[in-house]
Structures are given as C-alpha cells and as structure tokens.
Length: 459
Ligand code: HEM
Image 1: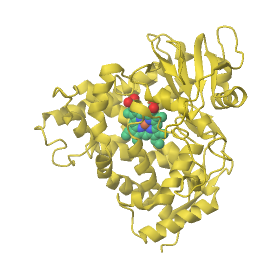
Image 2: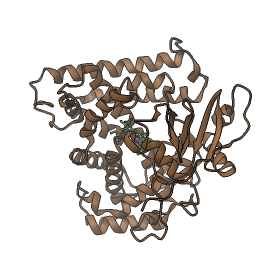
Image 3: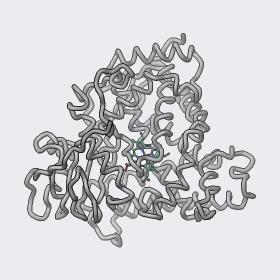
Image 4: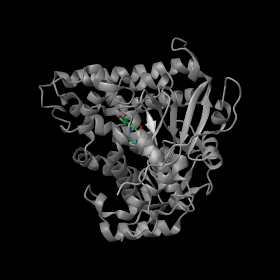
C-alpha cells in the first residue's frame, strides 16, 4: 500500500544577511547549519544561499519525490568551475537527452555482473595491503584506504595498461581533488571562469597530466582491432574497453573525448568516496567491540581462513550491515542539490522554477524519527528481524532516482570485500577514539586517524 502524500508546508528558516543570505552560516559549518534547520524549523525550510531562494527538505517522502523527478521537473545545480575541468561533459554534469544517452552508455559497464568481474582485483588489492601490514604497526587509516581504492579503480578502468605511470596519475588526481575541495570552501566559487588563481593553475596542470595519459590510453586501444578491447595483456572486461565498445540506440559510439570524460569521472567518483566510507567504518568498528566480535565470528565461520571471493558478498550479512550502518552515520556525500524547473511539484504543491532544492543524507540519516539514538553505530538496525521500519529514502548515501549513483553496487561490493579481507587478518585500533568530522567535498575526519594493527590469529 502506498503511504499517503505528506503535504509540503515550507516555513521560513533562519534570518540571513542582506545579499549573502544564510551563506556565511552555511559556509562556517554546513552540517550544523542543516541540522539546525531541520531541528528548529521542520521538514521543509526556505532559506537563502546568497540571493538565491532555496528549499531544504528532510522528509524521506519529499526526498524520494525530488530525486525521482530529476530527469523531468528538477534539474542539475551547476557548482564551481574546477569540478568541470575534471569530469568534463560526462554523465555527472550533463542534462536532458545528452545525460540519458550517456547514462545508457555507461551504466552497462557497472552492472552487477561486471562488478563481479572486478571482485578479484578488489580482493587482491586488499591482500597486497595486508601482506605489507605488520602486527603492532601504526597506519594512517585514510591514507591506506585511499591507496587501496585508487589501485582498484585504476585497474578496473585500465587493466594493467598504466604500469608504473599509475603513481604519477594518482598524485595528479589527488592534487585535482584538493583544489576542487578548496574552491568549494571559498570565494573562488564565485569567480568568473576566465580568472586564473594559483589554485586553478595547479588544477589545470594536474588535469593536463591526466589528459595526456588518457589520450595515450584511448588512442592505443582504438588502434587495436574492434572486439579485442584490452589486447593481449589486459582482460577484455576493463571499464575502458566497455566504454569504447558501448553503442547507443542508433549504434553510435562515444567519441574519444566522451570516453575520456566518462573514464575520468568513474575514477574521480569511484575512489575517494569509498575510501572515506571505509575509513569511517574502521573508526566505528574500533569503538564497537560487539560489532567487531560479530564480524570476527562471521568471517571465521563463513571463510574458515580462506580469502573471500565474489560469492562471499552475499554470504556475509553482518559485514554488509556494518558497511550500511557506517554509510548511515557518516554518509561521505552529505548533500544533494537540484533546481526546480517549470511544472515542479513536491507533496502536491508547486515549487517555483529556479528554486534550488537541497536534501542531505547527513541530516536525514541522523533523524531520530527514522533511526532511534541516531548517532549510535548499530549494524543490527539493518537485520531482517530489526523492530523499526525504516522508510524508503531515510537512508540514501547514494542518492536515488534516475540520477542515483552509478557506482553504488561497485562501492558496496568493494567496501564489503575489502573489509572482509582485511578484518580477517587484522583488528584496527583507531585513535583518537572521538574524532571530529568536517564537511568538504565529502564528510571526512577533521583529524588524522591512526590505527594500531593487531594481527588476528588464523582460525
Ligand atoms: C561509498 C561510495 C560512494 C558514494 C557514497 C557515492 C555517492 C554518490 C552520490 C550521492 C551521487 C549523486 C546521486 C544523486 O544525485 O542522486 C553519486 C553519483 C555518481 N556516482 Fe557515486 N558514490 C560512491 C561510489 C561511486 C563509485 C565506486 C562510482 C564509479 C565506479 C561512482 C560513480 C558515480 C557517478 C558516475 C555518478 C553520477 C551519476 C549521474 O549523474 O547520472 N560512485 N554518487
């Protein structure tokens, strides 16, 4: 039975400043600002980001409606210049028919069957890290997770083609990501496109390194006879091959520039998000002896000392619940904006065209109406026998609707298989025990998390 429509009754939010609106308060601490709007004003709040009228939604039904209508009456909010330099005109920043065509071309590359084909790379990369780790050693949790997820996404995209150039590329991507995050935090967000600040120059230098390599890889692949994709050394199922071989309904392939944009987007979207999710997972597990004991027990019982395989994803429900709950407490992507177009409605009411509408996995995931004791890490919330009914879209770390995350399956399989492979061999005791968070491009720990590795006895 369908739930009755929740009417949209927006109320005015906190008073802002002339011209700037709520921008200063939002910029200072966006997560605290959005939480305050929900707590003090309710499920639908009007506010001003600069001179632009905005609406902030907290009710899962409105969120589902908003996300579900994004290929019709809600469009993309374009933010910043830097991000475009990296992702170009890919699926992530395209609109309308162009977006539909690209989504149709890219999506098959990350279907569950394709993701399965990358499970070996995921597990091997975790095993390589575990082979380096030593009992009693201290590691930088986020740094280690980033190294592993970078390696996975680069192998999944390009097979073995990068060789020892992978490192230089990973460094260039890290520079680009830093400069994008810096732009989002500062006044540079409002600079005209033609201005070249030192930060923008650093970004363009990093993009040039990435582009040169992409050009080299794509032309080399295009010279190979069709259907041989990755050639002799590379398995035919890497993502670059899939993008090069994809055809739209009229039989047209992506151009070389379009392949570049999609490949770089999958790369950029597909590693820092997952490494952040895993970093929070280790942090939460380290503070939750019961959840960790449950994981030890599941891994010993199901795997009995052997490394996991792709099939084990389905056989490790507690590991999946741990990842799901970590994505609830610390959703890496903390906000999803959209822009109302002509004819937009929510909860049965019209929304004026041009209004920017925001929803936040952070605030909705921490709403006590859907998640009692919301800051507590409780993987058991997601068990089949859990007492609380969790409404649709009360949990949406991957967004939703037609523009929902393309890599959601990839990310979840990757996180569970990495967690299983590493937790089978080590406990990570993370300090500090209470870590503050900060919201940049993603929600990340505001301090460096260091883990002392404790080797686990093999069963
Ligand atoms: C824990 C890891 C990840 C998180 C939390 C995450 C989160 C998100 C979110 C919130 C969106 C916006 C969705 C929306 O607007 O409804 C998104 C879009 C996207 N993500 Fe992810 N993501 C993750 C991993 C990945 C991976 C591994 C890939 C690629 C392999 C990927 C590729 C994309 C792409 C291409 C889009 C744009 C889709 C479109 O606009 O049509 N993501 N992601």
